[in-house]
Amino acid sequence: MSVLLLPRLTALGISNILESAGADQLTPTKARAIIEDGASMLSYAASGGSRSEDLAIQLGSAIRDIATRSGFPDNSSQVARSRFDHEAAIYLACHPELGTGESLRDDVWSYLATVIAPDIVAWRYPDSAPHRFSGGVRNTLQRLWSRGRVLDRGEDHPDRWGLVRSLSEDAAVQIFERPSVAGNVPLAVAIAEEWVTMAAKVGRGRMEPIMRRATKLVRLRNEIVDIAGLPAEERDTLVAHCFELARASLED
Image (cartoon, rainbow, N blue to C red; front, side):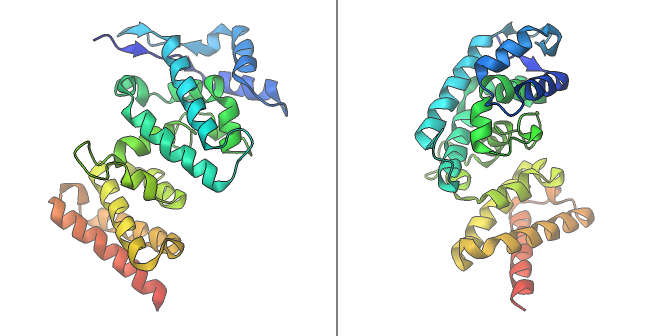
């Protein structure tokens, strides 16, 4: 099967588009008009597949539908934005064309966020910070794809997307913006699962300080013991112990 190659946007392209838009609402139409005047801002992989602007458009259309069902453009409440995050993460994680190396490219996500769905990015993050458009762990769409891929419990699980829908934003940030955690999928999943378990015991409202402290403890332990090399049962026990220590220290 031929790999579909998505457009890629350079860092200069992102800057030009955001600066040209200024305080005005950035739309896909405006973004496209800007890059038409600077072809060097746009590229594709040199080989290995077939170029497909259509795929980018299809992805944008689906993301726009999800955003609209979630409240875009008028409702930007936390509930609306969380709903968008959950459903978009599941959609992106399941998309067969995003299971290739193209989805590992930051500049691909830069294009999707800055050219295909810039108004949705601005709705999701009203401050429209540049890092929400640039590829990386804070890119509006890339972060959701990563969460969906990592936290997928599998097609045979009765609550396949339970982790995606249950984790708070702060909990997800503690996992996915920490390279030593996010780069180790079994560890990331173990932490997410323990967050859900602990939240059921103490309530979601108490989880932010517990999660932050537990994640620090896990990262410190990882400096001493290669957690990735531990058997699954030992790894999960270690993570659970870190959460219990975190809870106990905050209750003293």
